[in-house]
Length: 326
Image (cartoon, rainbow, N blue to C red; front, side, top):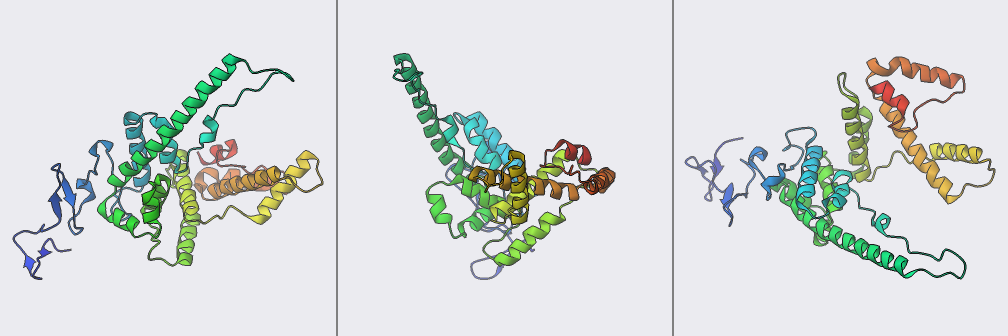
């Protein structure tokens, strides 16, 4: 790439190689208007105090750019936002907060024909008002967080976001979960605007099944990369863990433990689906762990299967798996 720029008349301006790449805004900060000479290392975002910015995959300088960005945003929110802890779930897990857990339970009479005491009702009203205030603060914080995150995005990343079909709709309602989801996809190299949907699915699946624990990589670092890969698949709408055969297997196990021979209840079906997904993730994690650290134990697990003893891990935090890959 040349260090010179082309002027308005089509000629190269050798005297000022940074023509029209930045301009001053009203508060004296430098605002990027071009991309040829843009350097993410010089970009501080609208709130430099955050201490992190986020760009496209080609702009970011580290593999863990999204994770680092989330951590910095979370730290800033905890310092600066009222009841900031309530919104950290959105930042770290990129999912909505379940506010139903905050709602107080209404008092009920202790006996048939009994009455609720005035003190009980007053306490309930107080708790309910606190619940409403907490919800209102959360909504205000979500709007502020949306603006904060956008302000820390590089111009190229913002351009990618604005090109997405749902951008205007989601931006208009300050949907910060959608915003973080799309940023995560772009940072992961997902080009929704230019890639064929089937090619994209193939590439994401290929990347997931090619993921390996490095020789000297710690368990925590490996788990973080694994979870991020799973999250990227989920954000792209690719669910490889919803496997009918494995769900049926877990359903049979649940019915056998309950001593049932009838059709599974909805709750049992949900439990079977969740259990199958977590067990499949555990095997994926195990299969891709560093062979020098787990191979002999993995062989023991296979020998146990010959003896009709299934001791394979059931989730990614299973003690056996922790021992194997640590």
